[in-house]
Image 1 (cartoon, rainbow, N blue to C red):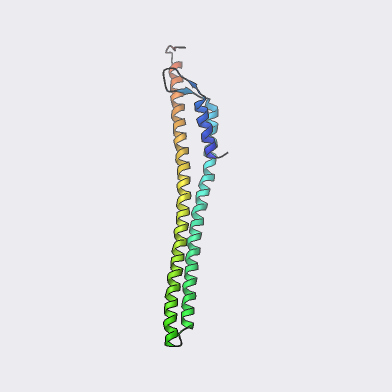
Image 2: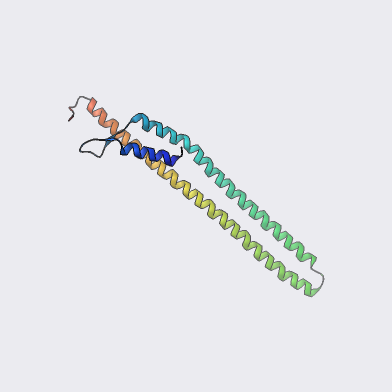
Length: 162
């Protein structure tokens, strides 16, 4: 089960909890809450490994783009050197070489921009999932503490209203 589904289960557990009159508190099944929190903890390594994979893929794409750009530049240089025989051909070669270099440079930059945008989007998505998970866990812990404190004050000998 994914983190989002587990967070939905925690939310449902809280929604289904027995409301304590005159408060914003509910009682929940502590065993079930702890079980869900453990499952979320177990899911984090998967989410983190996905983030690592995204970063590795980004790095790989950038390296491949740079290698392709270098190869194209070298290819353009080789083509330009082969064309150096007469002045007209030399001038054409220089123009063609510049065009190729500019075009390949733009392609390499576009590839790099796309790779970075993809990585940024995936990391932002992962950040949102992790932020939501953390918020839900914190809210669950706070709710659990409140429930435990309420239960503790009832056990301490104070009269209850029930």
